[in-house]
Structure formats: structure tokens, C-alpha cells
Amino acid sequence: MNSQSPASEPSYRLSQLISVIRNRRTIRSYADRPIPQELILRLLLASKASVSLDWNDSVARLIYFNSQQGKRKAAGLIMDAYKNQKLYKWLPKKLNQAMAERIARIPAFLAVIRKLGPSSQHNDRNYAAISAMIQSFSLLAWENDIGIVWNTDPALREPSVAAGLGLQEDERIVCLLYMGMYDKAPKPKARTAIAQKLTHLAP
Image 1 (cartoon, rainbow, N blue to C red):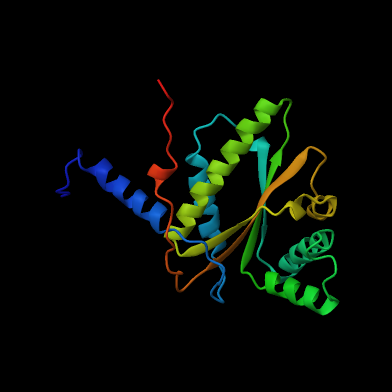
Image 2: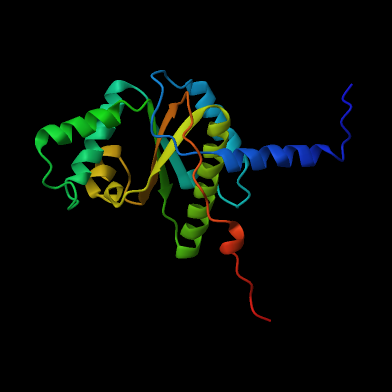
């Protein structure tokens, strides 16, 4: 028999959620073991259910890379796109290749794609819904010892990336998630108190 009263149950769940939000870290160093694909699917379904905005499945799709061949292809697309950026344009070929190899060693990638709609309002709502879903996914992943880095670099919007991923004319990439299991989380960094970011509308 559960001794916990119904009235205390929501508070308990809220405290768990607050703990996950506060403790989540960006993980850039991953363990050398695969992520169970069934776990990724389960977390994605749960994160989709967390979105309350009115949107349907056709506004977004996901491309999952976890095979070595797929990851090498994605890494090549990324590095080719970086070549058009001033910071990477003159990188020596060996260094460029080394960076591609490092990216390909990440256990899994998830490309998040959105479909453009008939109006800017429609697109804004869908973008917000997709971002909320991915944020929920990040928190659920953290709770399951999966670290995630969001890549939203402008280089991902290069036409070569869209072509390489097979995007349609009305599709745009939202972000590329780098994912992997981790053994040790980095130490937390000081964060700006929310009170310092909060302003009040003058009466």
C-alpha cells in the first residue's frame, strides 16, 4: 500500500523535475558504448507528448545517425559546410579530416527538421513546438545518462547540408543533436540567478 497521500504526489514529482532541470549539463565527452535505439524512441515519444501547442506530425521529422557510415556522411557534410565559414575556410586538409573523424566518433546524431507552412505565424508556432519537444527530450535523456549537445551553427543552413540530408524545398534544419552515454558529468558552473533576469511591467 502506498503511504503517500494524493495531495503530496504532485509536489514530489515537481521536486524531481526541478532537480533534473537544475542538474542537467551539456556533455561533450561520451562513453564508448552505443545508445539503445529503443530508449531514444521511447524518450522521443514522451517528449512529443509534453508539447501542448497545436501541431501535427507533418511539421517535423527526425533523421537518426548511429551507424559508422551514416555518422561519417553527416560529419563530412558538416565539415564541407564549415569550409564556407571564414573560421574554417583555410584549415589544413589533415586538420579538417581530424575534426571530421572526431565528429564521427560521437555515438549518435539526431537531425531535427521542420516544414515551412503558409504563414510566419504558423512557422513560429511550429518552431516553438519543436524546440519545446527537443528541450523535453534533452531533460529525459539526461535522466537516462545520455548527454546531448545542440548544434545550431549557421553552417548547418548551407545548401550543401540540406542537399546531403535530402531536405525538400519547404524543409529547414532546426538543429543537430550530438548524443552519447556518459560516465561522469562535468562540475556545475555558476548560473545567473533568475531574479536578475526578471523585470516587471511598470504600472
